[in-house]
Image (cartoon, rainbow, N blue to C red; front, side):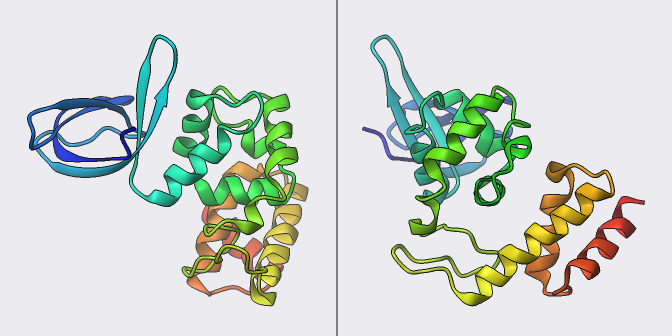
Length: 204
């Protein structure tokens, strides 16, 4: 199984990149964004083997790779759907959506329907708290097996209340959630009303 590739990008488009290793082998890898040709890259690889095909999915971090493979355990989620979720939403936004039972955010990713989104929440809600990349708006990750701290629980409540307020104003969760997370990480707001004011200013 291939788990990691480093080399030079010789071709890239919006879906695939070909990476030439020092051994002279060029690997075709699914990538979320186009890469710059002639640049050196290093990617963590999820190697999917089927009866008639083998596919390589590339990720910048081991955490992204781990989360992708966890998504594959969900009934109805295949490699293309899982990769679409990560490419369009990112790990943190998926975790937040699962934490708050937010089907709309999950099904905003291409190829993910309502039933698949509901199944993700049902299958993964209890698992994400045990991940090293568990729900946290702080830079320090939640360690496996360690309960979420009071600070992180407070952040989760803040996100939930801010989302509810924004929904009442007619905004979609997938539009405002990245903004909420950004401002939480900056530390400039610690109340729902403060976050809502900042978001409204940015959306005007």
